[in-house]
Length: 138
Image 1 (cartoon, rainbow, N blue to C red):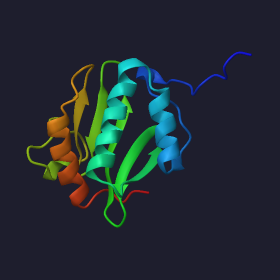
Image 2: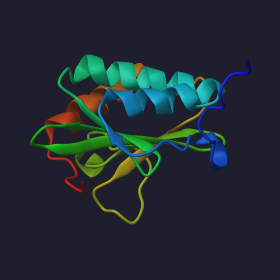
Image 3: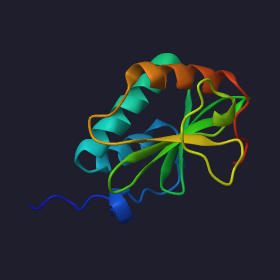
Image 4: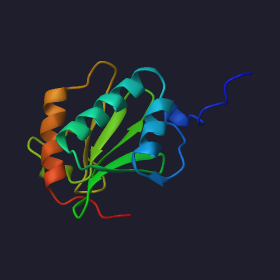
């Protein structure tokens, strides 16, 4: 009997995962990510769980979100063809700020390519971001 097909992969290899709350949908997203992108998402998820033991998780808009009860959502990630984008929703307050910026003046991000995950810098940003006021959008 053939294996059941996994989630559909959208542009850049981003998994199409139904919205949901809790660890289950986030783990389904990570498991469906192709190749090295899944490794990066696993490293991020493990590091967030280590740094923020009471982390809340959800999937919205085909992206995992991480938050703290009462403080909102502080981070999310999304797969693209050549990198995994990790967005800190209150990233403008982080020191040093992540390099990417756009229309939302509060959000900053870092694009992580294959073998480019910087545990030390990510831990600094996760600690700062989780301690601050996050995004209260859903």
